[in-house]
Length: 232
Image (cartoon, rainbow, N blue to C red):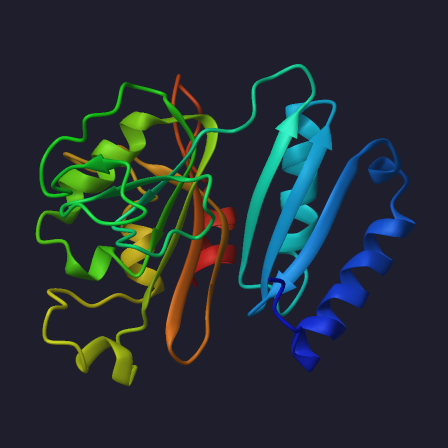
């Protein structure tokens, strides 16, 4: 059942639709937009990967949007393959492929996130890691695994508690703390790091949000000006 929009979500949705309607480039795209908890949910079909990137970029520039969860199908391609890691029995969407350590409703692949994932290279169009990374001891190794399984131009969608929040310190099963600089660490070239590039990074009082795409096949990292835009 569709949740009722908050006043903020309703205003953001009206603003986003107005902006998109003025941009003639979007007239060739067929997609639906919803906003829940200041996260943009996009479904539909576009003609090219460039159109998908254009939608992501336009929404990420809208003040008040924390993240863009797009499940867009590019015309002529198979529907996106989407993994939800650490999902427990509450996947974000029922058609996602749930991965968790313990078998339960919603878990399609039983696997320890602290070990190599039983997923082939470049298998995923999207990976959702929603309030799971704060429980991971070997974070660098898991991030490298996610880099491995996500396709070129695919997206890792993550949400973690903000270090200064009660949510971060109130759960004794959390083994690490996050702020935007933690995300920035994975967007630089460094030893043992397979880097990502940010599409959207934001925070509220309780949560850090980030949409990241893996840097692959000789793609450039962010330049210093772009890096400062997202992280300074």
